Image (cartoon, rainbow, N blue to C red; front, top):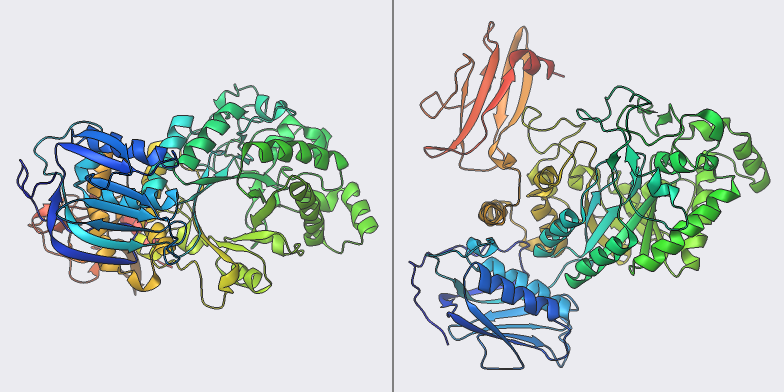
Length: 623
């Protein structure tokens, strides 16, 4: 039944569970999986996915023979649904007990068993994530008692598939990684100016026209205007059958999917398909955007539109079309909420529109914020009529929202705090903590975007900030916008390990969070990702780089993000190693130097990336 020794040498591994559980009691000693494993599962078929997952994982990389039985207390691994509810752990919590005899996992609901199994895998060697048999591994885990349950109910990741399209298999892989780290909401940003990604059978042009654009590669937002005659063959969309398949796939993993159709702004793809929904349908400027500029962001706030990308709020046909869209969305997605965007809607063309002026006079609307509020109320009426609830980005607060509207606070936490105190439900999603499209290291190593977000900052995220009414905080979410993300490998790179930090902020008790321990766990999970062939960012090994000026001299300051690293540099164009002088203080840039190179070591091994920055670029960093 059990063994205290293995064929391979046993190596003591740290317990590295992400997100950190509520309580962990490591008792000493190990349980080694036998070659033939008996797994006992509850009767009734409620845990079919978890049963199959255990069988697949334990028979692949470990090469074990796995037998599934029901209600067998003599099994090596016993999964139990509590007959008497344990109120402490709730619907998603679990209790995991590993002795020298067996592994026992208890929960109130199948969701808890799912999360407990994810923790179980994290107690096993990292090779458990391999897709092939791994020899010379002792498949042992520590004798341990874990009690665990989430801090908040909404633990989300958002993926934007409009700016760049991802296949069904790629979406499923992204969901698989979410499940490993106990996320339970996948916010699917399905529409934007750059593409409409979901089949709406009653409005076929949305995908026939709106899903396709001319391909341009480079720095998104700075492209030249596309050639009008260039083929529009870049993009794609999900059929309704594919949507149903992905929704079921996610639900099996205890992940609900919230669809987003972003209106009234971000609507170029809709207007390309149905220009009659614009304020100025005859302009000839309605096409799916490619990444060439069409908004002016130099306004200090809400953007101005160079080309129209907003729906006409005074046109009844807009609401007829949205009714068709929302009807089909409501049938495809069982989740309670439909997200309707509402962010960054330019008022430029509304202000020019005679239709909008007539609407304002008729409805006694004083300004454009109230026009957008009118639009939002109309859309929410449609959503409520389908038995769903509406959520939007925090701009929808500006003209007033109905009591039933929920808010996603992205421009910091202040709007979420305000909304929670006015008794609106809120998901915290602030840019300064959880916008995963931001650069996570120096611009010399990252695709250039307009802001940075280091791992340690994401780890500081608190979904229930001081001053908020906790009763109305549903939870929190990290967002991955994909303007500069062209493929799923880069999406993985941008998500992880910041996705670890967000997961721990959402699941773990605030008092259990410890940055240094989290860093150690993150490095252990890098090994797991290596076996899983999942890409991640090694940015934690690269220092932050800042430049100051004193008189005519420039000084470079290098700040490591984690402890235990040594930094070496050169200004002579050679590649530094650990025989070069060690960085100890701000370095003066030599007058005639052309390039600076930087590398970090741990002990005598290089661990960071070689960073090369022209001195000219360094001098430009002085503010």
